Image 1 (cartoon, protein in one colour):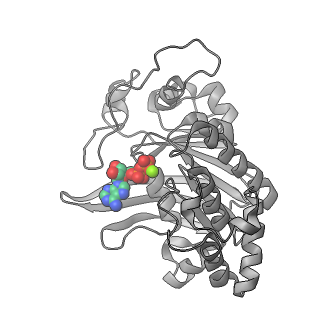
Image 2 (image 1 turned 120 degrees about the vertical axis):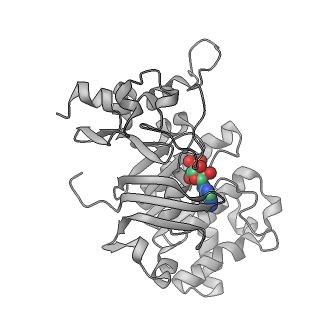
Length: 329
Ligand SMILES: Nc1ncnc2c1ncn2[C@@H]1O[C@H](COP(=O)(O)OP(=O)(O)O)[C@@H](O)[C@H]1O
Ligand SMILES: [Mg+2]
Protein backbone atom coordinates (compact mmCIF):
# COMPACT_ATOMS: atom_id res chain seq x y z
CA UNK A 1 0.00 0.00 0.00
CA UNK A 2 1.52 3.29 -1.07
CA UNK A 3 0.05 5.75 1.44
CA UNK A 4 0.13 5.46 5.22
CA UNK A 5 -2.67 3.16 6.49
CA UNK A 6 -5.44 4.69 8.60
CA UNK A 7 -5.10 2.05 11.29
CA UNK A 8 -2.19 -0.32 11.63
CA UNK A 9 -2.45 -3.29 13.98
CA UNK A 10 0.84 -4.93 14.75
CA UNK A 11 1.62 -8.03 16.75
CA UNK A 12 -1.56 -7.79 18.87
CA UNK A 13 -1.79 -10.42 21.58
CA UNK A 14 -4.80 -10.24 23.90
CA UNK A 15 -5.29 -12.47 26.92
CA UNK A 16 -8.23 -13.06 29.23
CA UNK A 17 -8.23 -14.23 32.80
CA UNK A 18 -10.00 -17.58 33.00
CA UNK A 19 -10.40 -20.07 35.83
CA UNK A 20 -7.36 -21.85 34.38
CA UNK A 21 -5.18 -18.74 34.29
CA UNK A 22 -4.48 -16.25 31.51
CA UNK A 23 -5.58 -17.60 28.13
CA UNK A 24 -4.58 -16.20 24.76
CA UNK A 25 -7.51 -15.02 22.62
CA UNK A 26 -5.52 -13.44 19.80
CA UNK A 27 -1.84 -13.91 19.08
CA UNK A 28 0.40 -11.65 17.01
CA UNK A 29 -2.46 -10.26 14.94
CA UNK A 30 -1.20 -7.82 12.32
CA UNK A 31 -3.04 -6.07 9.53
CA UNK A 32 -3.67 -2.58 8.18
CA UNK A 33 -6.86 -0.73 7.41
CA UNK A 34 -6.37 1.77 4.60
CA UNK A 35 -8.04 5.18 4.54
CA UNK A 36 -11.46 4.77 2.91
CA UNK A 37 -10.88 1.03 2.63
CA UNK A 38 -13.46 -1.71 2.63
CA UNK A 39 -11.97 -4.47 4.75
CA UNK A 40 -13.65 -7.77 5.57
CA UNK A 41 -12.62 -9.91 8.53
CA UNK A 42 -13.90 -13.48 8.38
CA UNK A 43 -13.61 -16.63 10.48
CA UNK A 44 -15.81 -19.04 12.41
CA UNK A 45 -17.24 -18.00 15.75
CA UNK A 46 -14.40 -17.88 18.29
CA UNK A 47 -11.69 -16.84 15.80
CA UNK A 48 -10.86 -13.61 17.60
CA UNK A 49 -12.61 -11.16 15.28
CA UNK A 50 -14.51 -9.28 17.99
CA UNK A 51 -11.57 -9.34 20.39
CA UNK A 52 -9.47 -7.65 17.70
CA UNK A 53 -12.17 -5.07 16.90
CA UNK A 54 -12.76 -4.24 20.57
CA UNK A 55 -9.01 -3.80 21.01
CA UNK A 56 -9.01 -0.96 18.47
CA UNK A 57 -11.43 0.95 20.71
CA UNK A 58 -9.98 -0.53 23.90
CA UNK A 59 -13.34 -1.74 25.07
CA UNK A 60 -12.21 -4.87 26.92
CA UNK A 61 -12.95 -5.08 30.63
CA UNK A 62 -9.98 -4.03 32.71
CA UNK A 63 -8.58 -6.50 35.21
CA UNK A 64 -9.82 -9.55 33.34
CA UNK A 65 -8.03 -8.75 30.08
CA UNK A 66 -4.57 -7.61 29.08
CA UNK A 67 -2.60 -6.68 25.99
CA UNK A 68 0.48 -8.87 26.12
CA UNK A 69 2.05 -7.28 23.12
CA UNK A 70 1.21 -5.10 20.20
CA UNK A 71 0.58 -1.63 18.91
CA UNK A 72 -2.45 -0.15 17.18
CA UNK A 73 -1.37 2.97 15.35
CA UNK A 74 -3.93 5.60 14.46
CA UNK A 75 -3.23 9.19 13.51
CA UNK A 76 0.33 9.11 14.82
CA UNK A 77 -0.62 7.55 18.16
CA UNK A 78 -0.55 4.07 19.66
CA UNK A 79 -4.12 3.50 20.84
CA UNK A 80 -3.01 0.78 23.27
CA UNK A 81 -0.98 3.40 25.13
CA UNK A 82 -3.25 6.43 24.73
CA UNK A 83 -4.81 7.97 27.83
CA UNK A 84 -8.37 7.01 28.77
CA UNK A 85 -9.32 10.63 28.05
CA UNK A 86 -7.93 10.43 24.50
CA UNK A 87 -9.75 7.13 23.97
CA UNK A 88 -13.07 8.65 25.03
CA UNK A 89 -12.58 11.37 22.43
CA UNK A 90 -11.62 8.89 19.71
CA UNK A 91 -14.53 6.50 20.35
CA UNK A 92 -17.51 7.62 18.35
CA UNK A 93 -15.77 10.64 16.86
CA UNK A 94 -12.90 9.06 14.90
CA UNK A 95 -13.72 5.38 15.14
CA UNK A 96 -17.26 4.10 15.66
CA UNK A 97 -18.71 0.64 15.98
CA UNK A 98 -22.02 -1.12 15.35
CA UNK A 99 -22.76 -4.48 16.89
CA UNK A 100 -24.75 -7.58 16.03
CA UNK A 101 -27.84 -7.07 18.11
CA UNK A 102 -29.83 -3.98 17.19
CA UNK A 103 -32.65 -5.05 19.52
CA UNK A 104 -30.69 -4.59 22.72
CA UNK A 105 -28.32 -1.79 21.70
CA UNK A 106 -30.92 0.98 21.86
CA UNK A 107 -32.26 2.36 25.11
CA UNK A 108 -36.02 1.56 25.23
CA UNK A 109 -36.96 4.60 27.33
CA UNK A 110 -35.31 7.25 25.14
CA UNK A 111 -36.57 8.50 21.77
CA UNK A 112 -34.48 7.98 18.67
CA UNK A 113 -33.83 11.74 18.72
CA UNK A 114 -32.43 11.62 22.26
CA UNK A 115 -30.14 8.72 21.40
CA UNK A 116 -28.69 10.27 18.26
CA UNK A 117 -28.44 13.71 19.91
CA UNK A 118 -26.44 12.39 22.84
CA UNK A 119 -23.34 11.70 20.78
CA UNK A 120 -23.69 14.96 18.81
CA UNK A 121 -23.93 17.06 21.96
CA UNK A 122 -21.02 15.20 23.57
CA UNK A 123 -18.55 15.16 20.67
CA UNK A 124 -19.67 18.08 18.55
CA UNK A 125 -21.02 20.42 21.22
CA UNK A 126 -24.30 20.92 19.37
CA UNK A 127 -27.30 22.44 21.15
CA UNK A 128 -30.42 20.32 21.62
CA UNK A 129 -32.15 22.07 18.70
CA UNK A 130 -29.18 21.71 16.37
CA UNK A 131 -28.77 18.07 17.36
CA UNK A 132 -32.43 17.33 16.55
CA UNK A 133 -32.04 18.85 13.10
CA UNK A 134 -28.92 16.80 12.50
CA UNK A 135 -30.63 13.64 13.83
CA UNK A 136 -33.32 14.02 11.16
CA UNK A 137 -30.66 14.46 8.48
CA UNK A 138 -28.93 11.33 9.72
CA UNK A 139 -32.14 9.28 9.59
CA UNK A 140 -32.55 10.49 6.00
CA UNK A 141 -28.98 9.46 5.30
CA UNK A 142 -29.63 5.90 6.50
CA UNK A 143 -32.78 5.85 4.31
CA UNK A 144 -35.44 5.92 7.02
CA UNK A 145 -38.57 7.35 5.41
CA UNK A 146 -40.53 10.14 7.09
CA UNK A 147 -37.52 10.99 9.28
CA UNK A 148 -38.95 14.22 10.76
CA UNK A 149 -41.80 12.27 12.32
CA UNK A 150 -39.99 9.04 13.18
CA UNK A 151 -37.19 10.84 15.03
CA UNK A 152 -39.50 11.38 18.01
CA UNK A 153 -40.54 7.74 18.28
CA UNK A 154 -39.25 5.13 20.72
CA UNK A 155 -37.23 2.07 19.58
CA UNK A 156 -40.11 -0.42 20.02
CA UNK A 157 -41.80 1.16 16.98
CA UNK A 158 -38.85 0.10 14.80
CA UNK A 159 -38.20 -3.31 13.20
CA UNK A 160 -34.82 -5.06 13.58
CA UNK A 161 -33.56 -3.74 10.25
CA UNK A 162 -34.74 -0.20 11.08
CA UNK A 163 -33.05 -0.35 14.48
CA UNK A 164 -29.81 -1.36 12.82
CA UNK A 165 -30.20 1.67 10.55
CA UNK A 166 -30.61 3.84 13.66
CA UNK A 167 -27.48 2.27 15.19
CA UNK A 168 -25.62 3.09 11.98
CA UNK A 169 -26.96 6.67 12.12
CA UNK A 170 -25.59 7.02 15.66
CA UNK A 171 -22.26 5.49 14.60
CA UNK A 172 -21.78 7.88 11.67
CA UNK A 173 -23.17 10.95 13.48
CA UNK A 174 -19.72 12.43 14.01
CA UNK A 175 -18.38 11.42 10.60
CA UNK A 176 -15.88 8.81 11.82
CA UNK A 177 -12.95 7.88 9.61
CA UNK A 178 -13.45 4.22 10.45
CA UNK A 179 -16.69 2.35 11.05
CA UNK A 180 -16.33 -1.11 12.54
CA UNK A 181 -19.40 -3.26 11.86
CA UNK A 182 -19.26 -6.47 13.91
CA UNK A 183 -21.70 -9.02 12.43
CA UNK A 184 -24.17 -6.18 11.74
CA UNK A 185 -26.54 -8.37 9.74
CA UNK A 186 -26.25 -11.70 11.54
CA UNK A 187 -29.46 -11.20 13.54
CA UNK A 188 -31.48 -10.06 10.52
CA UNK A 189 -33.47 -11.74 7.72
CA UNK A 190 -31.61 -12.39 4.49
CA UNK A 191 -33.39 -9.65 2.51
CA UNK A 192 -32.82 -7.09 5.27
CA UNK A 193 -29.20 -8.24 5.46
CA UNK A 194 -28.64 -7.32 1.83
CA UNK A 195 -30.21 -3.88 2.36
CA UNK A 196 -27.98 -3.12 5.35
CA UNK A 197 -24.86 -4.20 3.44
CA UNK A 198 -25.89 -2.00 0.55
CA UNK A 199 -26.40 0.91 2.94
CA UNK A 200 -22.94 0.41 4.45
CA UNK A 201 -21.42 0.28 1.00
CA UNK A 202 -23.17 3.51 -0.07
CA UNK A 203 -22.26 5.34 3.14
CA UNK A 204 -18.63 4.34 2.79
CA UNK A 205 -18.39 6.23 -0.51
CA UNK A 206 -20.73 9.08 0.45
CA UNK A 207 -18.85 9.80 3.68
CA UNK A 208 -15.43 8.66 2.47
CA UNK A 209 -14.83 6.52 5.55
CA UNK A 210 -13.16 3.17 5.95
CA UNK A 211 -15.38 0.24 6.92
CA UNK A 212 -14.18 -2.90 8.69
CA UNK A 213 -16.90 -5.49 8.25
CA UNK A 214 -16.72 -8.53 10.49
CA UNK A 215 -18.66 -11.67 9.62
CA UNK A 216 -18.49 -15.43 10.08
CA UNK A 217 -20.05 -15.64 6.61
CA UNK A 218 -17.61 -15.47 3.72
CA UNK A 219 -20.55 -14.82 1.36
CA UNK A 220 -21.30 -11.54 3.16
CA UNK A 221 -17.64 -10.56 3.10
CA UNK A 222 -17.24 -11.48 -0.59
CA UNK A 223 -20.08 -9.17 -1.52
CA UNK A 224 -18.84 -6.27 0.48
CA UNK A 225 -15.09 -6.20 0.95
CA UNK A 226 -12.22 -5.14 -1.23
CA UNK A 227 -9.71 -6.90 0.99
CA UNK A 228 -10.18 -9.87 3.31
CA UNK A 229 -8.42 -10.90 6.50
CA UNK A 230 -9.12 -14.54 7.42
CA UNK A 231 -8.76 -15.38 11.12
CA UNK A 232 -8.60 -18.75 12.80
CA UNK A 233 -8.19 -19.48 16.52
CA UNK A 234 -6.87 -16.01 17.28
CA UNK A 235 -4.45 -15.79 14.36
CA UNK A 236 -4.55 -14.18 10.95
CA UNK A 237 -4.12 -17.11 8.55
CA UNK A 238 -4.57 -15.31 5.23
CA UNK A 239 -4.87 -11.72 4.03
CA UNK A 240 -5.53 -10.83 0.38
CA UNK A 241 -7.62 -8.71 -1.97
CA UNK A 242 -11.01 -10.38 -2.37
CA UNK A 243 -10.52 -11.33 -6.04
CA UNK A 244 -7.11 -12.86 -5.30
CA UNK A 245 -8.61 -14.84 -2.43
CA UNK A 246 -11.37 -16.24 -4.63
CA UNK A 247 -8.98 -17.06 -7.46
CA UNK A 248 -6.19 -18.60 -5.43
CA UNK A 249 -6.83 -19.00 -1.74
CA UNK A 250 -3.82 -20.72 -0.25
CA UNK A 251 -4.67 -21.57 3.34
CA UNK A 252 -6.61 -24.83 3.78
CA UNK A 253 -8.87 -23.03 6.27
CA UNK A 254 -9.79 -20.39 3.68
CA UNK A 255 -10.48 -23.19 1.20
CA UNK A 256 -12.71 -24.83 3.79
CA UNK A 257 -14.66 -21.61 4.31
CA UNK A 258 -15.12 -21.29 0.56
CA UNK A 259 -16.28 -24.87 0.18
CA UNK A 260 -18.86 -24.19 2.93
CA UNK A 261 -20.42 -21.29 1.02
CA UNK A 262 -23.76 -22.13 -0.55
CA UNK A 263 -23.57 -21.82 -4.34
CA UNK A 264 -26.03 -19.18 -5.50
CA UNK A 265 -26.88 -20.78 -8.83
CA UNK A 266 -25.70 -24.35 -8.32
CA UNK A 267 -27.85 -27.40 -7.67
CA UNK A 268 -29.25 -27.83 -4.17
CA UNK A 269 -26.76 -29.98 -2.28
CA UNK A 270 -25.81 -30.78 1.24
CA UNK A 271 -23.55 -28.01 2.44
CA UNK A 272 -19.92 -28.88 3.17
CA UNK A 273 -18.68 -28.02 6.61
CA UNK A 274 -15.09 -28.16 7.84
CA UNK A 275 -14.76 -31.25 10.05
CA UNK A 276 -14.01 -30.77 13.74
CA UNK A 277 -14.29 -27.55 15.70
CA UNK A 278 -12.30 -24.49 16.58
CA UNK A 279 -10.19 -24.93 19.75
CA UNK A 280 -11.15 -23.23 22.97
CA UNK A 281 -8.74 -20.50 24.14
CA UNK A 282 -7.55 -22.73 27.00
CA UNK A 283 -6.80 -25.65 24.69
CA UNK A 284 -3.17 -26.43 23.85
CA UNK A 285 -2.63 -27.37 20.21
CA UNK A 286 0.88 -28.29 19.12
CA UNK A 287 2.08 -26.72 15.88
CA UNK A 288 -0.44 -25.15 13.54
CA UNK A 289 -3.70 -24.63 15.37
CA UNK A 290 -5.67 -25.69 12.30
CA UNK A 291 -3.70 -28.95 11.80
CA UNK A 292 -6.17 -31.24 13.65
CA UNK A 293 -8.86 -30.23 11.11
CA UNK A 294 -6.65 -29.95 8.05
CA UNK A 295 -6.71 -32.50 5.23
CA UNK A 296 -3.27 -31.37 4.06
CA UNK A 297 -1.40 -31.55 7.37
CA UNK A 298 2.19 -32.82 7.18
CA UNK A 299 4.72 -33.63 9.88
CA UNK A 300 6.00 -30.04 9.97
CA UNK A 301 2.48 -28.78 10.77
CA UNK A 302 2.45 -30.65 14.07
CA UNK A 303 5.63 -29.11 15.42
CA UNK A 304 5.53 -25.33 14.92
CA UNK A 305 3.00 -22.63 14.13
CA UNK A 306 3.98 -21.36 10.68
CA UNK A 307 4.67 -17.65 10.21
CA UNK A 308 2.40 -15.37 8.24
CA UNK A 309 4.51 -14.80 5.14
CA UNK A 310 3.97 -12.73 1.99
CA UNK A 311 3.48 -14.78 -1.18
CA UNK A 312 3.02 -11.59 -3.23
CA UNK A 313 3.03 -7.91 -2.27
CA UNK A 314 -0.65 -7.98 -1.27
CA UNK A 315 -1.15 -11.60 -0.21
CA UNK A 316 0.01 -13.15 3.08
CA UNK A 317 -0.59 -16.69 4.24
CA UNK A 318 0.26 -18.76 7.32
CA UNK A 319 0.77 -22.28 5.97
CA UNK A 320 4.22 -23.87 6.01
CA UNK A 321 3.83 -26.58 3.31
CA UNK A 322 2.15 -24.29 0.84
CA UNK A 323 4.32 -21.23 1.22
CA UNK A 324 7.35 -23.51 1.09
CA UNK A 325 6.39 -25.04 -2.25
CA UNK A 326 5.21 -21.76 -3.76
CA UNK A 327 8.07 -19.64 -2.52
CA UNK A 328 7.82 -16.05 -1.40
CA UNK A 329 8.50 -14.44 -4.80
N1 LIG B 1 -14.12 -11.59 28.00
C1 LIG B 1 -13.65 -12.78 27.64
N2 LIG B 1 -13.19 -13.65 28.58
C2 LIG B 1 -12.68 -14.85 28.23
N3 LIG B 1 -12.61 -15.30 26.97
C3 LIG B 1 -13.04 -14.49 25.98
C4 LIG B 1 -13.59 -13.19 26.26
N4 LIG B 1 -13.94 -12.61 25.09
C5 LIG B 1 -13.63 -13.50 24.12
N5 LIG B 1 -13.09 -14.63 24.66
C6 LIG B 1 -12.61 -15.80 23.91
O1 LIG B 1 -11.71 -15.37 22.91
C7 LIG B 1 -11.88 -16.09 21.72
C8 LIG B 1 -12.18 -15.16 20.58
O2 LIG B 1 -13.45 -14.58 20.79
P1 LIG B 1 -14.13 -13.56 19.79
O3 LIG B 1 -13.17 -12.52 19.37
O4 LIG B 1 -15.38 -13.08 20.46
O5 LIG B 1 -14.50 -14.48 18.55
P2 LIG B 1 -15.31 -14.09 17.24
O6 LIG B 1 -15.73 -12.66 17.34
O7 LIG B 1 -14.38 -14.36 16.11
O8 LIG B 1 -16.47 -15.04 17.22
C9 LIG B 1 -12.99 -17.11 21.99
O9 LIG B 1 -12.41 -18.33 22.32
C10 LIG B 1 -13.72 -16.51 23.15
O10 LIG B 1 -14.31 -17.51 23.94
MG1 LIG C 1 -17.67 -11.89 17.41
